[in-house]
Image (cartoon, one colour):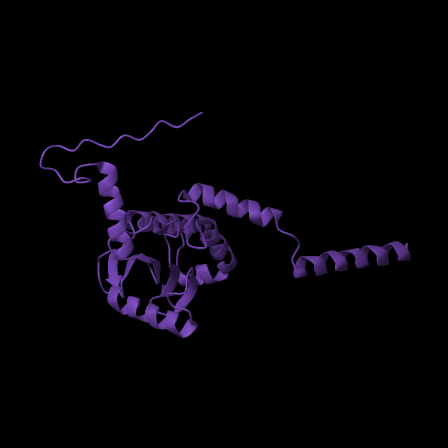
Length: 212
């Protein structure tokens, strides 16, 4: 099938060619964006830069970083200390630091933080924070405090991984998160300890069968 020939667009009197067409304006904007990267920002699935939980002294209990904004552990902990100093005595739930957007929440002796870029939608970050807290509140039986969290740290990591993977938000419903975590625990292979217990039990059964 032959393509129809393109006809030249008729411009209103006094208008410059390309001055009024939406496609021409879009092309001009794209060209401007190419020359100035700050003009246009490509949408990204990579919403979350970091999630971390600190105690009431600002010490790290859990941290996951999803890009190389802070490539070393030292830089990460320096950033966490700066965030803690800026937020732990305020009643606000959002902060801006080093070109980043930070939403946070406290509970007894814990501080929960979710970090995104300065251009990130704050509501998306708040949704992640709320899902994280509500999931842990359910898992820890409404006892969201330092000792309980440390006693269940493996489960806390599983919760975080179900909500965010590589900076991409996977889930924002705490009920779904808990169900997936429970499934992973039930479906997980035997740990070294449980394997040892099985072997010991087998040895005991063999011993008693020989004595009969």
